[in-house]
Image (cartoon, rainbow, N blue to C red; front, side, top):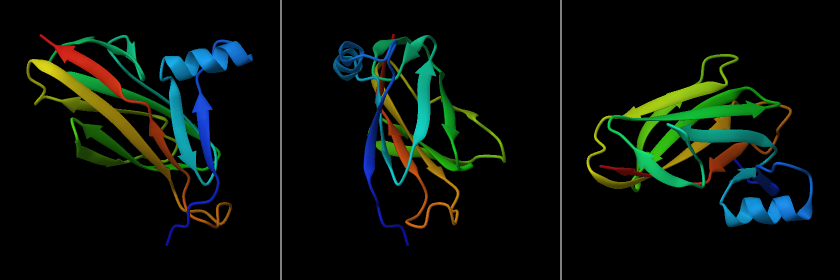
Length: 138
């Protein structure tokens, strides 16, 4: 059973300042976490999470993850549905997913990461969600 504890929002900033935090909010460079802290960066072909850019099919989404607890399960969301759930190998911090079904048009991707269960986190695993990544395939 998982009981969600405190929820946190993380920001990818260039410097530690109020202006940088507001810039991260405006540009959707954020992650949401429950039960602890987890760092995540999601990108594809030079387009980072929170951004909208051009891509090509097949689309490769890459996720970089870090947490005090080992990463357990990473899930990839594409265009309104879960398309893959992947168990991370011990010590693995980089995972990728290839969407070979992405045809012409606009697509969006979200990554959800969950740590392994641990006595260090009695309420359950740390769970984090990335900002969406938008790609237009021509």
